[in-house]
Amino acid sequence: LFSAGGGVTVGSAAFALALGGPRFTVTTHPGGAAAGAPFAQQPVVAVTDPAGNAIATGAGVVRYVRVTAALATSFVPAAVLSDAHGACPCAVRLRDGVAAFTSLALSHPGGGFVIEFTTEAVRFAAGPTRSAPFAVTGPAVYATVDGAPARVEYLAPFALAVTLRDANRRLVAAERVTLAAVLLDANRHPRGG
Image (cartoon, rainbow, N blue to C red; front, top):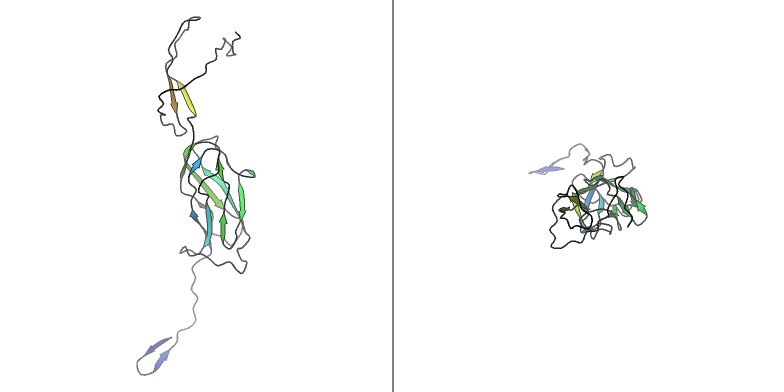
């Protein structure tokens, strides 16, 4: 309704205001991750309108939809995303418009990990959403021999240079490292002794 001076009121025709369909928004990104342990900060995904406002779900429209988490990006090929039930994809149900994961963990250290959240519900046409990239801490996982001698004499000392790198291939600084060595025969089998 519009009103002007002099008591004249004019009404417009009815119109609809469309904001678009509901979508997923990651409200809490994973963080505080150590290899093999549940993330200290577990991801939370909420159902929002396109402007990021929470959608009330009291009517049950999106109350019990399953939300699935899967590893979308990893620079560590052996890394596995899991929860208390095993390897992902891992699912939780929306409760009042929020999907809160409680036990997600990654098996290996590294950086640039991204988790993708999806649902099979047709209402969420906006598609999946992804977490921000995050890192997982852990021990050095790569050792390369940089200076092995071409020949070693029996019972004679020799020098060996080894470089340690983390899962992101960054050098690991260490004052003292204990290495175990196994002598191999010509067929690369451990020698008896």
